[in-house]
Length: 80
Length: 497
Image 1 (cartoon, rainbow over the protein chains, first blue to last red):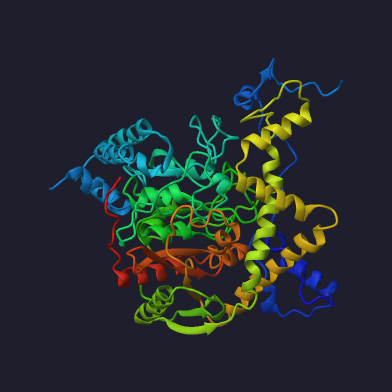
Image 2 (image 1 turned 90 degrees about the horizontal axis):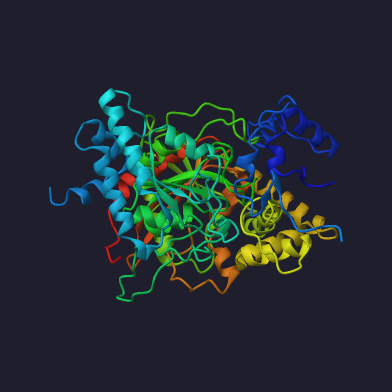
C-alpha cells in the first residue's frame, strides 16, 4: 500500500474533509480526525455560473499585439 | 532639522502615515523626497520604470483628502511596485525582453488595492526575470546592486537577493519606505535578509494572484517588504483579501494585523527544526540562530526541538514543480498577442514562435522552461512530476506534525549573507541552494517572514525566519516583532551611489 495519500497540496487545498476520507479509504489508510484536519487548508475551488462576465474590450486586448489588423491578431500564413 | 528631505525618506510607513495625519509635513513633501532619492540612485538599478508624476499625483490627492477629512489607510505613503504586477498604462515586463514594451490595459488586484488605500507609485521595481533567480542577475534590464558593501574595504558589488531584489535594494537605500514583493520559493524572504529589511510571505491564497505575471501558480504569493514588522502588517492589510478573479483566493476576512501586534510570546511554543542545521553553514548564522532562540525565550516563548524529516527533498521537489508550472504558464509568450515578436524572413508560425522565444527569454528562464517541459513529458511525468507532488504532500505533513508540538518555527532565512554578483551565477545548483530554508514553507503554502537580526563579520545583514501555521500571519508577525524589539537592528548601508 502507498504510505501516503498521493495528492498535491494544491489539490488538497481544494478538497473537503469528506474527500480526504474517501481518498484515504480508497488507499486503505486509516486516518484520524486530527490527520484529516491537518491536510486541509480551509479553501475550496469555487464554481461560478457558466456565463459571460466580461468582454467588449477588443481594442484593449489588441492594444499590445505586435500585429493587430482589422480587429484581429495578425500572424504569418499557416497554410502554404 | 538637519536635512528635512533625508529625514522624511528615513521614516517608516507608519511614521509617514502618522506624521502626515498629524500635519507634520505634506504628502507632496514626502513624494518629492523619495522621487529625488530614486532619481539619484541610478547606480543601484533598482527601478525599471520611474513614475515620479504618479507619486506626486497620489500625494496631491492625499493632501486634498487630508484637507477634506477623507483620509485612507495609506494616504501620503509612496511605495515601489515589483515589475511582476500589471499596472494599467505603465510598462510591465517581469524584467524580461519578451514583455518589453507591454503596457497592461488593466491593474492587478493587489496594486489596485494599494492605490485604493491611498498609496502612490514611485515606479516599477527591477527583479529576476519572471521571478526566476536568487540574486537579481537574470533581469534583462541589468543587475540590481545592493546598497550594502563588505566592511573589508573591497568594493565588490553585492547581490540584493532575488527575485524581489529591486524591492529590497530600494527599501534598504531609502528609495521607498515599502514595496511589493512576490515569493515563489523565497523571493521575498531571502532578499529581505540580504538587505537588512523585513518581508512576509502570507498564507497561499491571502493575496490575489490576478494581474501578477505567473511563474508557478501553486506557489506564487504576493507579500510586502518594508523596514520593520509593523510596516509589513500595515502593507499586508492593504494587499490581502478575497478576489473572485483568482480561483485560489481565500474567502476570508482580512485580520487587523497591525492592531493586534504584540511582542509578548508567553504561552507560545517555538520549534527549532533539527534538519535545518545544514552542513557548511557559516558559524555566524548558527550563532545568530542561537541568539534568536534566546530572544524568543526572553519574550516568553517555550523552545522545543522538532523534526521536519523530508526537508532534504524540498529543493529537488521544488525544482521540478516550479519549472513544470513555469513551462506551462510561459507558453503564452508566443509573439502573437503581446510582447516581442521575432519573425525571420519567410518564417511560418512555428518558426515565429521558436524565434520569438529564443530571443525573448533569458538563459535561466529557458533553462527552467526546458526542465519543466522535460519533467512533464510523456515517459518522465510519473518519475519526476508525480513523485515531486507526493514529496510536496510529505513536506506539508512534516509541518502538520510539527504543529502538534509547537505554534511557530524559527530558522535562519538563508544559509549565507549576501554574496557578490557573479559569485554564483555560473553555478545554478549553488544558486538554488540559497533557497534551502525558504522553499519548504512555500511548498506547504504557509506564512513566513524574515526579519533583520544582526550583521556578519563583514558587516552584512543576516535575517531570521519565522514560519507559522496556515492563516496565522499574526503569530508570525508577533514573533518577528519580538525579535525586532530585541535585535535593535539599526544598521544602514552607507551611501556610495
